[in-house]
Figure (tube, rainbow over the protein chains, first blue to last red):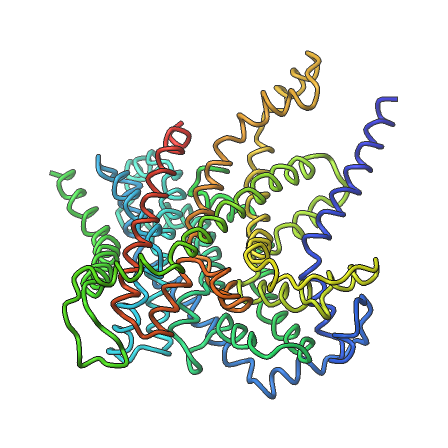
Length: 274
Length: 290
């Protein structure tokens, strides 16, 4: 009897959960479907059955050179993340293993720099980029995104490193491990998962950053965010192609994101929710 | 002596991050502050002069200014309401035993990974378009006249799009927090005859307080600067109906070429963000320290 109730409960919950999930996912699903429709089909009214053409994907590549913004996105998001890691790892390391009274304050201050509205420094950044010839350059944008995400990278690494027990170092030292051996054989293996999670999450954040990437680029260094935003003006009659471009723009990061759910919660809440 | 060495080393290791962030924070902000007191137009860059408080006065007396502040707050509050309430509801649902939980989670979390321009264009063209959008198709099916969302309810439309992007984030964090709730406590409450509502109010909600706080804090940081969603959908219009402060400053700076005016707006944005931040930190500080 009790089991019958639980099964019914489970089925009811399943039905509702799937309904909600499909509703939330619907805009993405519909984009995917529209991307393999022909243009007349795309505006012919609601239909979940496409004719299954891949022409749009080819057109987006041949007419708008999709690979260029794609490569820009890859270079800028990966580049800025690795740059941020190189700068942040020593800092987070020091804060986690030799904390002082001021460590907490420094961390809070770093986080507070995220609170500064980007738009407040749009004018000086734009003028500096113009004067240094950095507008529409991949290097400029990479440095920019590195700076924006640096506080988050330091914070995330700090919360991961803090969980590495300090005693293990003492144990290694007692066993006669030198500093180099300590780093290579003891610390690195324990730090790698945290570094990998940070890397993954920040690539996602950098990939989707949509203020500086749009404002500081025009054509040469424009990543996918700017590329897609450039489709905003002409209305209608190109939706299938836009859907194809959109699908290609979000697919890599969507798949990466699915694998990083756990790290996402930890990372974006700075370890407050696990 | 060893400790002295470690301390020096620790300082050296922290120096690059701290210095970079210090420069990143101070230099552009100081420049914005400086520009905000200048008459400086990019169309006439040779003619720069001291303006005193004129830029602030200009910004303050512009009717678009108050509307943009109101819109900024409306977007933040509207999206927070939808995502927190919706997030709790969906998290409670997904916390039940269901078939295909893994796939459901993947579907629900997906919008968070969609870049803002794509999210905005999907909603603009495929969902909310008055002629060809899915909502228009539904309205026509039931014999109603389709609504031109971005013309009639521009701010609401923006809120819907942004809420769609952040709902997964709230849901995922609240769900994670829910799953750490001690099941023994739940069972004990059930045994004592507490019904669902009571269990929710006295057990679940207090347990979620910390997660809700974090959701509000982090989302607010991002929601104050909503930009791309406005750029590709309404472009701030009609009139200034969907212009938030970020968008107004962009308009003044890069479309109006008014460096002084935009800088004054930037300083106002910083002050606003700080008020919100202090208010938030105070409200959430106690909750986070626990």
